[in-house]
Image (cartoon, rainbow over all chains, first blue to last red; front, side, top):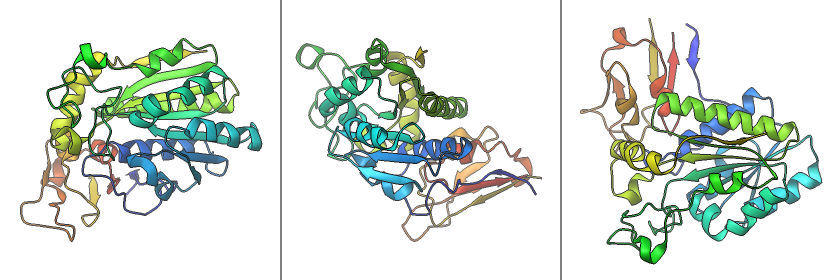
Length: 245
Length: 68
């Protein structure tokens, strides 16, 4: 029998600590497969964030570095500049990490046109710290710090990072994808590949924003979460390529 | 003939494979429990499986292998 699908060797055999149905596992696999397909495993250095994906270094079979909260793009900048254009440096960050405390770092990494790839997981909530409101939390969405739903008058509207970074000259490839269907998962994989290719071609900063789920903090089952992603998140965060040079 | 192998010990019973299977032949086991206390996913009708691997691609814990 021929193998149709098998776990990639770029993922370790460590059991992931993520909650059942968490999108992180899917994105980890997509990143690992993209690195394998592009034969970048030995050249890759990943930077793990603070957040649920803090243990990402246990799951990727590549060199990894942990960074302070939100500072992964700054750490990745240093690694890329030391190792040079042959290396493939990526950060893996959540929305609490990238869009909130790390907003300055991500904007300036893009602004400088750093040749790194950012994998940005947007699940509209802080996961690890217990489901607080993030800058990406949708209007009306209930979290532990917005128990009556996010109020736009008080907290503003959710930030669209991809669109914002696409306006910066230094960014070379930015796409938003989602995990809600097989087709979208395949598109996500293609986007991640494209982002790595953009980096290796030395074109500039690349980022893939992945709309993901947080069943535990959303208070939904894994299946309900995917349906909510489809019905609520995608209309506010439109999918597609935001920038390509 | 397709063959889907599920590593039941590592399955967390999230049900995403059940949601995405186009043939609707996945279910969470009603009789089995793994050592973490999850009901692992299982295929109800292997004959109907077309080895599209949609289940494997949506599995967050990468516990499904598909052969054809």
